[in-house]
Amino acid sequence: MKYALIDTMNTFFRAKHIASRNADTWEKIGMALHLTLGSVNQAVRNYGVDHVVFCLEGRSWRKDFYTPYKATRKVQQQDMTEAEQEESEMFWETYESLIKFLTEKTNVTVLRDPNAEADDCIARFAALHPDDEHIIISTDTDYLQLLSESVHMYNGVNRQLITIDGYFDDKGRPVIDKKTKEHKTLEDPQFLLFEKCMRGDTSDNVFSAYPGVRKKGSKNKTGLLEAYADKDKGGFNWNNIMLQRWTDHNEVEHRVRDDYERNRTLIDLTAQPIAFRDATDNCIKEGLNANKNVAQVGVHFMRFCGKYELNRISDQADSYAKWLNTSYEGKLINA
Image (tube, rainbow, N blue to C red):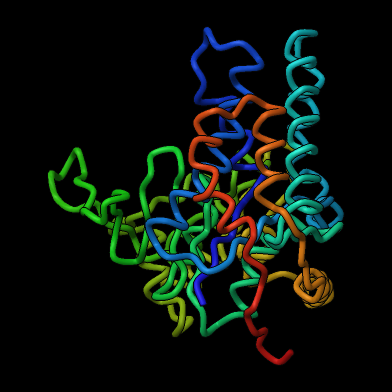
């Protein structure tokens, strides 16, 4: 089986950032719906997807594990102008309408763990289907850590497929790197994960485990590349970084290993605490056991398109209705 795993909120709200500055709110909302549904349709057609899974956000367990996690986003919301707040409300209303449509009027799978993020649902869905192939639809580079022979990532904005063999356009042709003039490739996904755990993630307000650490070391100082190469052995280069200590602006001393392990719990999508991982697995199993069998999906879809004036999509309604009408027929591991 081949699955498309949709980071729904990422795909929908990305339209706000790529829309023209002159676009009004209604145009941005139309773009959000076109981008979300169109990305899925393109992936289904290009890569022969058998079933589509929309993954939603819950209140992340990470906020209780690490108080600063995504704390800056609330501040950003408070700083919105009245016009921006109105636009945000319209986006959320449309988003909820889309989710209601997908949940009640189609046969796609919709997953939401109230205590986890879409990232967790996507990572665990793939883990529970190890013999299948998965295409993650998102622009979020956090998913690069999951890439493998059977897990790929599709960016619906630039229409590129990212695999462990590199970047490809939607015609299957290698994407050429503008700097090297050669096929654009990807660094080892596990090194990228290690580097992010060390440097932190400013977008999620996750602090660095070792501020100022260099990627490549010098004669007298170990870098991330040397430490990563020594990770499995746990030798000198690994310990030379992990045992370092530094003091923050509040005069609090940190040991790199401690902050690295904290960040790994927050960032590594295979390192969730067991209790939360099991809860997400249960939500996935419950969602897949729903046995959806909605009738007249095409009719419901045309009504949804009419509501939001999705003319370009409705012109290809048969193509969309095919995957919207396809129920889950897979098999969970150990289920």
